[in-house]
Image 1 (cartoon, rainbow, N blue to C red):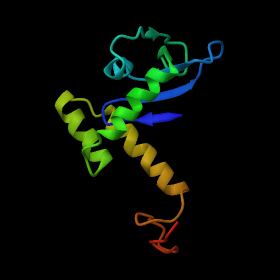
Image 2: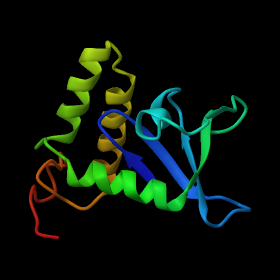
Image 3: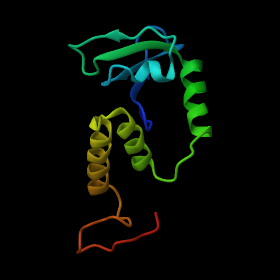
Image 4: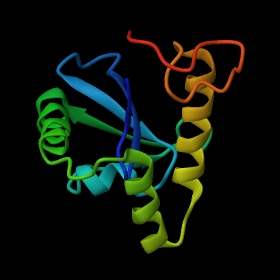
Length: 124
């Protein structure tokens, strides 16, 4: 599962040995500790995701649920941009825009479909 927060990104998968834990991975060095500050994060530069932590499923679920309950913005990408302007780092926002463009290109037709030969709006 990919989780995109306005200040952190994670790839979360089941731990291969401990089924009551998840492997939380990221490409940015501080992302995991932004949400789980007490967890030990390993730097694994030869892996697909160079930062990872083994965290109890319940802890992951509680923190992600807390983030969902406290959404206070009406535009996700803009909220990420505001976080990055403060930190003077646009790498996450650039990645989110790239992902949005790819998903928009391959997803169902919607308001922002830029193919002039297709309808520009549809109900899913």
